[in-house]
Image (cartoon, helix red, strand yellow):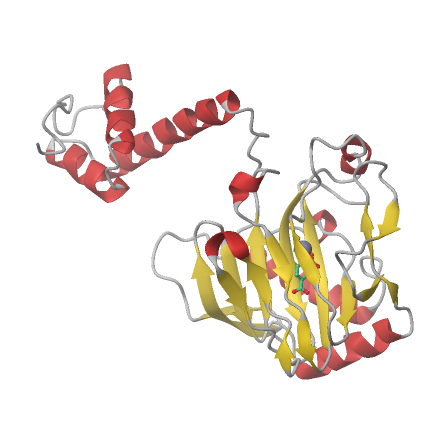
Length: 297
Ligand code: PD2
Ligand code: ZN
């Protein structure tokens, strides 16, 4: 049976209200597995203007998904940064005020974008030199207490810069803000990690677990984390990729490159489980930037 068979008809060129019947029909198509392009094509064939059809589809499905999420007791979806907000084909490069960044890979769900040359090799070396003096065994925020603790899942050493602590951090922060369209004020300070051979970061989520008692305290400062940028500061000889087990993706740690991913819900349905694979030979250095929902002070 054709898609448009039971589609409520409308007059061409008339004002086109999105009726409850049309909404029900759109949801029915989505449940039956129809692709959005096919639904829009059916609507256009029945006399709907394409822009109106697209808006109706978007609005209806968002409402439907919000209701489903509420029923499944998922945390609310929040706006997240997106470096490639356009609907069309992806560009090969993004021109920023101070640098041209290459697009190496883009995945839609989960949203993962790999950038080539986000940092120059000199910037990587400088960041390592600044961080090296201040390394300690890595800690993670304990969401049961809100305190920072040494974590056996993370066998690296690390340190945090304050946001805007030096000219290099400010430059990198401004560049990331321009790249992903998210204000500098909504970012944490840059964290640098060093992994020696055998060190790894076991798969985890970067958002704060809403079920943990310490999370409300953590969220007072800028709200949830909504996205991560992991920047690779050197080339480990073997191992040390960033893995996304839910989608069987592994990003190679190439000096100057970076991987971005976002999570609009603080929930495993975001499919943003990720880890740092064990370093087999050589060292691995990364700088991580976490983006928050709100202003982080
Ligand atoms: O070093 C990595 O590849 C890595 C992997 C997972 C870093 C982080 N998470 C992080 O800093 O959150
Ligand atoms: Zn992480």
